[in-house]
Image (cartoon, rainbow, N blue to C red):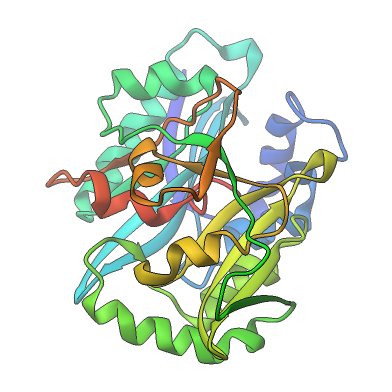
Length: 300
């Protein structure tokens, strides 16, 4: 018999989780590291992860984590969860366990009138589609076009959340008039998300205009000298200039509509890969309302 359960994260669950993850991952993978899982599931200032698991006897045979977050649009706030780390033990596939976890997660989140957000991979996509979550415009990889001189703009790397204290306060003040959903930013969230992360080594830039800090942006180093844009906190009026100041060879996964609104900022890559993206809640939200979340919903 298979039993589906949802409960807040406790460190005592890790041994069962490592046994399940060990059916997929090598010992050196970050998902096999206690430090990383304690950070992701237990240290988030928005709260502990919800652990969606399917047990068979004493073993966990399927799992999905729901990472809590709160979104803000002007004076509105919306509780939400990022769906990550979903897998089913190969020996128990074909039992519709993943679909049962999605159903349980949606029911739990729906009770809280919240949103479920994620970027499913190719293996999981059809199951999410059958669950009828609200898919948004797909994200496509594009290369940010660098500028040798962006007049009046500069970007510098920072290595501690304290270096962003002033800009974080300014961004929080601007949130009162923001007309799209974005994380309800705080100094504690910034420190946890981008500076305490045990394995990513993010490149966090503070962006300045005429000497004043206007925002920040985060990229992740990849192979072959490439970087991947993870998040941007930049006022709309300065977004194009800030994007051109990203580290050299930064790939941005954005909807095609965003490229049209920021001309001469991106070059489409020949890769055919697209990134499906869902943001599902009631009542439904679409398009520009949820387009500014970048990859912060999936790259942990």
